[in-house]
Amino acid sequence: MQQGRNIFSTTTGIILVGAVIGVLAAILQKLGNPGNMGICVACFDRDITGAVGMHRAEVVQYLRPEILGFVLGAFAAALATREFKPRGGSAPLARFVLGMVAMIGALVFLGCPWRTLLRLAGGDGNAILGLAGLTAGVWIGTLFFKQGYSLGRSHGQSIGTGLLMPLLILGLLILRLIYPPVDGEPKSGVLFYSLKGPGASHAPLLISLGIGLFVGFLAQRSRFCTMGALRDLILFRQIHLFTGFAALLLAAWLANLAIGQFNPGFAGQPVAHTQSFWNFSGMFVAGLAFALAGGCPGRQLFMSGEGDADAGIFVLGMITGAAFSHNFGLASSPAGIGPHGMAALIIGLMICLLIGFSNVQRVRA
Amino acid sequence: MSQTVDARGLSCPQPVLIVMERMKEMGSGQIEVIVDNEVSRENVGRAARSKGWQVEDEKREGGDYHLLLRR
Image 1 (cartoon, rainbow over the protein chains, first blue to last red):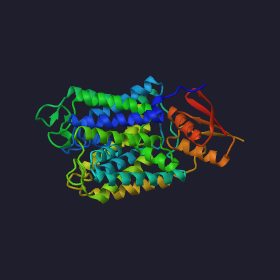
Image 2 (cartoon, rainbow over the protein chains, first blue to last red):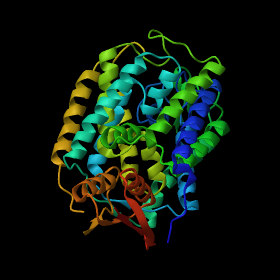
Image 3 (tube, rainbow over the protein chains, first blue to last red):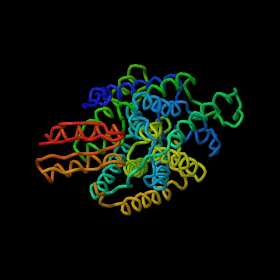
Image 4 (tube, chains in turn purple, orange):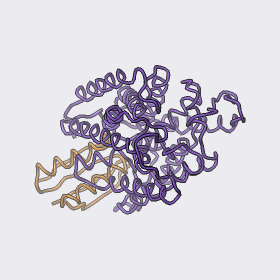
């Protein structure tokens, strides 16, 4: 029996999805999200980490509805198309640690692969170094894959296990509704809210959530993945995912031009620093961790919504990494890298190499 | 020549990587690929077609997908 065709996962489909995400990100920025951060999976996960008090960096605490929407939108798409499939058990601890390392690297650069593109689209020249680092990290990841790197097979899990991430996210959304931000108050019930800094910049709840749900749905259907875009290009010379990646960049750039958000330069860019080597290195380590874990941070969220417990573990690793980043002074700020950012990157790279080399095996298929 | 690739439970990019390697080794023939998710089904099909192989048959059995590649 021929399987039904998924128009979103055709090349035309993924180009449209990338373009739609790029435009929506520019609009989210216009409606209140931080500069060149209409959508940033790493930054927004970090803000959620702060919102629940796992770190106390007062300028980055907000329970970002976009992230909640990503998981729930992907969950809805997977249910609607019978692709919801509880699975897991492929080296969960390695994935958790890779999530931590990926987040620590991303916060040295100040952005995930999505924001790398959005920073470029907003004219931030420092993101060129981030993109170069990301590409180099993913390239090293492909070398491991060529040698037979594998975290092993996943296995079917119970419905309950598959539902855990969507339920956890739903729980956060309920908390957000029970404890909405209160003007001038840094805390509402159990949730922390930034009064200044990037955490205080956000689009209205329903718009953020609505766009998050829409993007989650589209990305699940199209398999949009920014790390996969570079990986498949390097590993297979396949441009399929890369066309979506390029479409996001182009569409966000055009949207920024249209609404006056394109400000080319290196100095004074929003939520960015100009230390080129560390911009490169942060995304290099993050890119390697994303590659070894098999997906960019957005894709990991979408897969967690499809019932992939291993992706869910990676997301929880990112949340933990964000907590360490801010509690231990690993994260950068517009002033430059954190006091322990260098040490963290070196350790992160060593951990990636340990996981990479120790999981080179020949999978019998 | 006919071979089977069981890529169930393997995540991206491994199913495609293994199938590509097998196609390269064989040059021509028939490969039955078993994957357990829609994404791998799409990716393996796309990769095969890009290398000049035909996806002759695709069927879903339980939670698995069986693809028959031929060249």
